[in-house]
Image 1: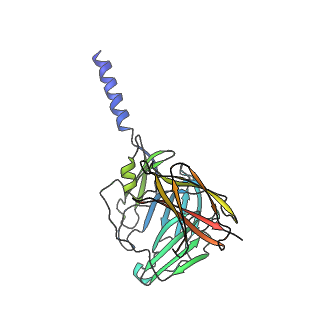
Image 2: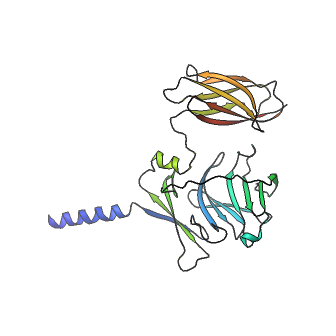
Image 3: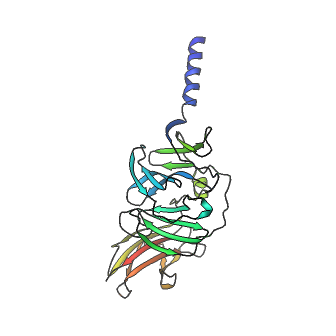
Length: 284
């Protein structure tokens, strides 16, 4: 009986330790900020608008973005060799931000924002290296980094944790991907800047989009709020139209026939806060 209890306890102990499971190791990938540039390489999980969740590796010295499926199979490499560099980064790239499929346009290609600080430059490029937009300004923010478990993600394939290490080579940080048995709480996930839809009101479908006439916009007001406004802005941030909405309905028919062709944004606002924003394209 004692032997049986000992074996059971041993099996339970081994099972408990095995709950955090190493899945994969990536070279030249890290969430750690070190040296110049401040983070020479990064590994993250991005949920793309069309293709869904992928591991994305940014290599500033190698000047590439590598994309992998959630089972760690390689998808493709995006060359960043044509991007401008500055002396302050010793030939490495600046910051790569907002890697996405339908943020900066509405095709299926990947786009991203690229920034340098000296000289100040911002460029929005697609995966073919084509420049879509540029300016001598930066998306400057003041960071407030809480002591949270930042490199932990809730995904469709379970919760993942990315840990960084360098061994004996300070110039080649690596990243380990572990699967976790539990789920990152929504409060922590939101504090870490993840874009998650909680039950606090949202804008969902807008169709047809693009359009040259009327469109239907589905919305949901936050719990315990009965009224709000849908505000239409153009690309310059100027208000174009404003509509009153309430929680009697879940959608509204909007007439855009008088609008010039271009890109617009609908924002749902209540007395307490802005709930969400939806992009709309008008064609003629």
